[in-house]
Image 1: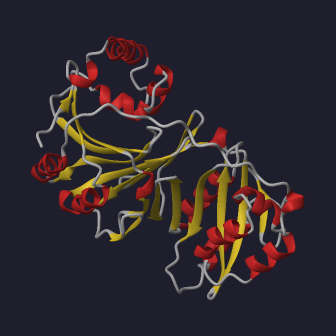
Image 2: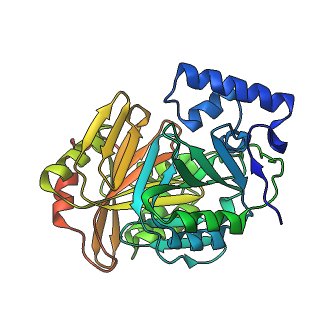
Length: 362
């Protein structure tokens, strides 16, 4: 099937509404050159997927067939790229080479030294290849994937070490005719059950019986408890609240001690994980940033409504995490000490967590 590249003047960008959006976008960028795509889309009243589909004079956009497993499997042939996953409050960027994709059509895993992903393909709805022409004339290629509401799930960007010919071949292989995007309404948020409806003793007993941290999600489902509600009901021997400055405190202490940590950021379609040390920490307005060569984290500290230390039992001892939540109870990010499956937790990480502010009533 012949591919259609979506640019200004192409099939998906000639309706009056599209032309008006393009003009309004240009005005926004002229006034605020550094505005992020997510914020531009919000200002225009459209989804980020629709924003990408508009194209522009400087961006050639190609719609991709929804063959997500095959596309991600092929990314390993591109060489070094930059993987980006974000949610409303955090952006996680990791440079490296994609390893072998494991799993199936519903859940995929890439577990590597550089790129470490947990992929929920059932949430993926739209995909595009974008070739931006930069001010110096150079081309920057990316693959961008979105959910049914048009929200960004995952993006993959070219780096100076990327195999450009392989990238172009991948785009040609999965390109399809452009079709109008059918954006779905946001799913109805599941209301939390009242605390009185929860079997708290049973929940706590099941928590104490966990053998692996991966059992935690199933535990929440079994007892019909939302994550933040579960931390609140667990009791302070299992989870306790700490200062909302916990992110900064953990990262600064980890840097001082040159301690390897794990940073998880996710959305319904993807969880991206960094494992390693952090060095270049920089606050910029409401954002707290890690600006290292291979790993960047940008997190809105003003979005952190609560921070929790969580202790989960396993066959190899307790595993301790720091979890950050927004005011709606959404999980922003999670931090662990570096740990391989089957190994005890690093005592140095426990010391970092123990150094956080005094326990508050959970």
